[in-house]
Amino acid sequence: MEDHYATFPCYPFSEENNNSLGFMELLGMQDYNTTPLLDFPLSSTQTQTPVLKVEEEQPQTVKDCSEVFNLHHQPPPTPNSSSISSASSEALNDEHSKTVDQAHQQQKTNQQLKAKKTNQKRQREPRFAFMTKSEVDHLEDGYRWRKYGQKAVKNSPFPRSYYRCTSASCNVKKRVERSYADPSVVVTTYEGQHTHPSPVVGRSGVCANNNFGSLLMDASGNYMSQYYHQHNALLSSLGFPASKNATLGAAALLSDHGLLQDVVPSHMLNED
DNA sequence: CGTTTTTGACCGGCGC
DNA sequence: GCGCCGGTCAAAAACG
Image (cartoon, rainbow, N blue to C red):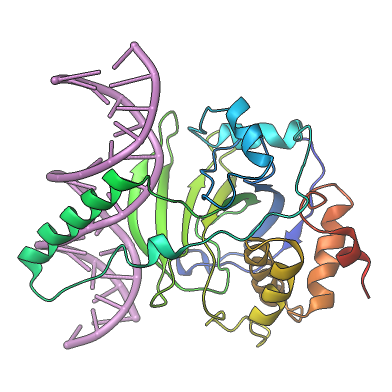
């Protein structure tokens, strides 16, 4: 990949790799709501926006990460990212309610799901993905995740892993897969929004700051905060304070190469 | 022993 | 209707 991208030396993120220095490069990120090339089932509140037109023109869904990579070489024609209203996530919250009796519970849950799905199509949270050059698949991002599935990816030798945030009543999920086009690249896709602050303290002792995330959320759309949590965690692991300035410094660094321009408002990058 | 991972089964959507 | 595929469940195993 001959494109420009920011490079971060960093510590290894997982135990199995802790005997060698890890190396990670953020290659780019993909905002599912601003690109015509990716599949992002919009919530009902978003179907009113012009973004939907983009999806109607490109009904094809992304089957593998190679299409994500194409974005790196051909940016979306019209970002159209003005301001995207936050998605309602209530439909997902009660989906996995549990009862005591297990045998009946599963039957019940299945019936509930079936009933729900016949009534309305399942809603999906806004998603975004970004690519990271990394030796390890599951990158530390300041949150705790429980793996709930792994599937083989079609046309790829590498599996895709499914994670859920371990915090109660938090429905954020993420998918992690390694690109078969470039095996050194990990594609991470986030779905949903954390309802709680990051529980993990970074290497520098500074916790990822949820207030900052909320701040950004107000300015430019809900899922953006996820990205900044990610960066706060990343910067923490690098020894930077997870402050607003440090984070925006990273954003500015990346924006020089056009990686964040679609999602970071200019006034935030210029802000002191 | 509580939590997380593994992994085959299962489900719904979609194209043919 | 059938098969494929992405996503999820859940029991068992592994882990700390």
